Amino acid sequence: KILLSLLFLFIVCQLWAQTIVKSNCYQTDFEDISEHKNWVLNSGPKGEKCPNRWFFGVAGANNGTAGLFVSGDEGATCNYVASPVSVVSYRSLTLDEGDYVISFDWQAGGMFGADGLYVCWVPASEEDRLKSVTSSFVQDFVPEFALDFGKDSLGLGQHIWNVSVDTIHSDGTPHFLVVVWKNSVAGISAPAACIDNIFINELNGCVRPSNLRVSLKGDEALFQWDGDADSYQVKCRNVESREWIEFDKVTTKYVEVKGLYEGIVSFFVRAKCGDFYSPWISYDK
View: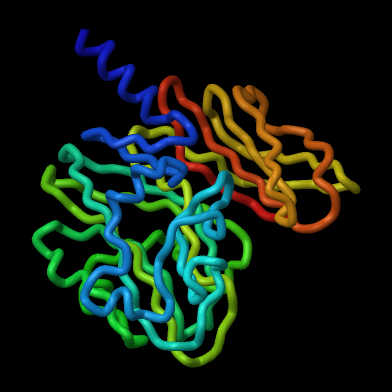
């Protein structure tokens, strides 16, 4: 019974288009409105006074109708204004002790050297420090608890969606998953930060595909990758369209896609290893 319960838990953690909160996983695409209430948006006494603030809505969605994003026009768009802020939002999570993989979709424009998007894993005992400010200097908790993401670091100037992946450690006590957007008065390069499809699961050895490559010809594409998984999930779309083309249970290391039309195309693929999934990895052509 214990093994069956664990197997069910792992399968449930992979379900698409909902929020999953368990002692060893967390997943949300922000489509579940009740999940929004679990986030503290624009924390601190100055949070709601910030000219650029965090919102939920379609302007921050990679797919679906909701994402978490920064807006300077009351959530109408993901544009921002050149008024200094370092604005904080967070969600409480308590995960079993162990190591976890975290991934999420994101995009952010911003001015290099002046603006920034940060994701932090902060002990609950530090909650008093998680305050938004009307200043372009990040709070001291950011460099202390910000995730690094290695080669997938959250550099700015990304006007198309990306996937970033890192690992976190839980000691079994409550922590906060924290997102911080800061901008200065140096100028504007929209969009502001947009985050969607957060995925946290136990580090299970299901390796992401690698060596992604694409050949385009008209509205057709050959999308290929390397890997040794049982099967793969693939999705892609032209960035001008909100319509996804999706493939499930792909047992080859390629898919042929038609109907993408001309323009920049975003491709996403993740591995399925038994009952586990790897994080998504993305490629733009």
